[in-house]
Image (cartoon, rainbow, N blue to C red; front, side, top):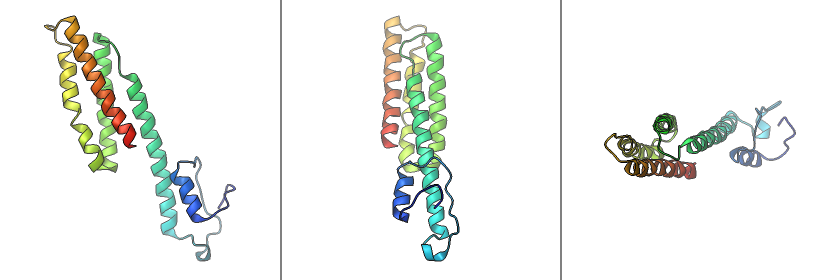
Length: 151
């Protein structure tokens, strides 16, 4: 295997699954005698893509988590709404990879949106708006943290 790795196929697969690969990997002079067959090459490619994708998703989730505003203002309501939309888009892309585990996270979106909308009601007092905004931001942080823990 090129790039200085010398070890067994199992060690190589463990290394890739752990996300420790940053470069493309290729086999020089593969032959059937060394155990490298197309199914193993496919596995290596799949694991590399999976590890990279998981790291990218964690990074995106962490960025969204950190963008959730802390205080209720009209500008922060708009930013919160944008974060919520981006989170939903990310959930949709994750759902394509693992529908069973991701589908329940969609259930959290509507109550958060409803609470956020109530926090912007002109009839609500400043205290009510702050409490509702805090409730919505806490719920979004909780759901994103749950998804991060799952990744």
